[in-house]
Length: 296
Length: 259
Image 1 (tube, rainbow over the protein chains, first blue to last red):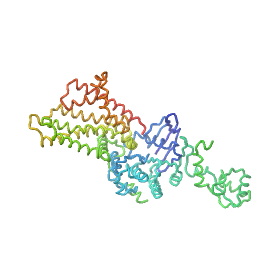
Image 2 (image 1 turned 90 degrees about the horizontal axis):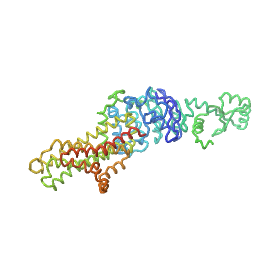
Image 3 (image 1 turned 180 degrees about the vertical axis):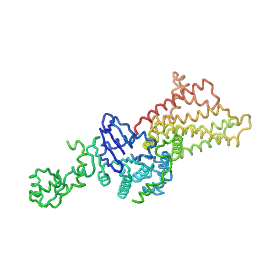
């Protein structure tokens, strides 16, 4: 279980993380979404005990991270896949950490298999790794101590599509076994298929939080009709605020039933009606994380 | 999916979840880190090669009375005492330049424990280097040593000075690495220090302080004779300035720096 309680952190007078609160329950995957520089990494660093919050509390498994006796055996962390010694071989990097947290070194080879780094890759020095290989090594590292909690910063960065699918399955499986997963991304599509809950951060503040369904519910209803002008008139007549959807039709800030009533009242034939779907969530993400100057 | 599930159930025998990794374990890890990177491995091998080469050259060129066991030990220690500080610098600075400090401090959040482990590893490696130097010197003396009185003599005081000399030069490297948290400035400044003093002590007003603070002048007598009380005082003063002070500043930085 992870709990961010009113975490706040400033660097050089600029508040990078501002009163951020959310929870990650066991058995769930939480996607932590935000544009680059929104404060995701700083939040994750405070949760991992690497950075002291100015105020607020970071609670992991019921206490402070730094009070865990052997944190590697409780929490798997991947904050930066590039943060490995270039001159060390991939397998050796895992052996060092296994030795540090007292894990049977035999587990290392199993994990290398799991993340798809074969023997020749494991023997290579990390400087010869692609970003995708570093991410795989980083995920193996996070899983090394058989943790209950995973904190992953942009783990999908640099992974190819098969790698992404594999990572999704791995994290889903981890959560289904009762683990808590917090992963950040600046790309919505990387996490929307995987995350049970989404936390969206913008300029250091949480701007939206909830399950995928909850966030979509707020994203409106997509309605499409062969006669768009008639549909628009019907929506206007029922005082339902609507905006044109990207691929035709309208996104209406109302429940589906109300949209249906409006169409019936206006005598308009509707070819499709439903939740605005992924495109709506994407719109929401872009709207919420839009740079301030773009809104102004 | 089943492959994933099976692998997550890999054996995890070892330290249990709520036992703090001990200092001996962490020290072992730090010793391993000194040799398991490309740079670390070659630096150690290079060091060993130089120790042997220096003794061989001394056996060929030096006069008979300078080829005793004790002399050859110091000859072997000379390259080691120059290279060990670099190993010391890298032991700390590479955690920053390679950003492995993220991993190290995530696994061991109490940073003083990491520092203690690095210090322990430095002390152990210094003693290993000294033992290696003794072995090389012993072979050299057996092969080509002079047959004069005291060929094999090594007063305990001299052995003690060798221990102090080796460990403090290693710790000085660690301290400089910690003070700068970057390899280049730490190594450059460390290397410039003796030359800098040589330059400064040409200024008459600085001649007296140099006698107390110039590590080249206060520490090198350790290799020559058993130090007098005054000489120990001078060596101690130098070590306080160049080892203790950087170590305190460095430790503070390592503990408080954002990684």
